[in-house]
Image (cartoon, rainbow, N blue to C red; front, top):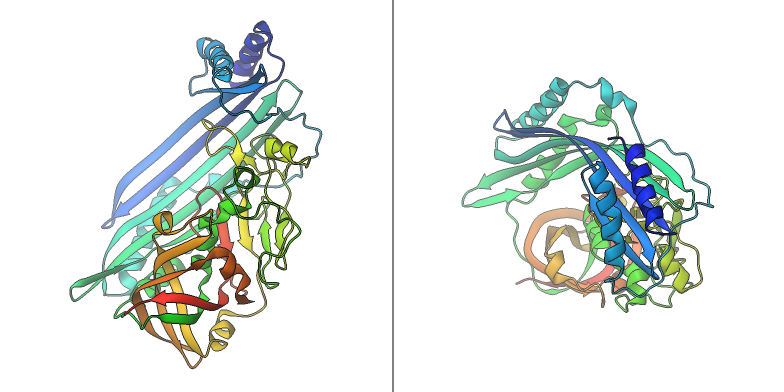
Length: 450
């Protein structure tokens, strides 16, 4: 059954139950995933899926239901279940079905040339990626993971207020995770590339970068505890931004889970820091013309030269503060209720090169990775204590590798202590948003080592 036919049955049932405000949301995807191990195709999948959700306002509460089956029986059931679930909803916040009175910006999120790439070429690329990683250094003992994945998605929202919006997008991601064994120790790291175009993938470049990352860790030692001036490398700073991104959610400020409540218009970071939420970013893993409520998305400065311009809002949280939604009402999947999430969320590039940042730190540390963000970071307070690794910086140059250290501090203090921002914007592995940052100089951070 096609989505339009299913929608007609759903809306007919909603009318029979005297529902006034309701919405059908759907996500259809075609995906390919290839995993290579020891120069053989270890896993290959080619799947097509569709999921739909229905929500309705009943007695002032929002009810939800979802299904993966498009037939007459499910069309009846999804409406009945949503109506029933509204009676048990504990959320008293006023909920909304969008009327579609905003204008959607046309953005191209599909690279049609992906259709010209044969599955054999995708196999070949993934095999070559693993081969290039192994050949990049004789020290590489194996590649634990080597993956190519792509997804073509179609999202749509149709509701009782006349809104009918749909868009398509495609994403490709490739990933390599090599291991180097040196004496009795094993060293590993990963690199990935996210794009909409197969022809932007470069197996040799990805292999070179990831092997360099792993080799640089060999021989790392701890250092004396103390307060250090540091350069935080781009992907690591993006990782920290991802970890604490929830503080910019109006949903969290309204629940008392963010210290940014009431801070819009106030200085919260160094004047060197501008943070952007850009749902129209080219090759962004989270680019959308409208959010999961059907609200038009726009690129916006969340922090502008240290000043908090706006939090992120959906229709419900915006209503609480007599504001407009920022177009950040997203579902984490078609099965989920609407919450507040960022899109492509990143610190804006500065003017200094990475080399210039290093030269500006006479003696200090370069932090290239952090671990334990789930347990060692408190989003509410902003406090963190994280295992880290990187390099010493001596006389303005990168010197010996450093490991077995813990960095601790507060995210809001860190933002205020950023002395300089690099021009090497890079993004962290996409999860509940796509987070990026250039490398930054932080004036002081506490390091626990020997």
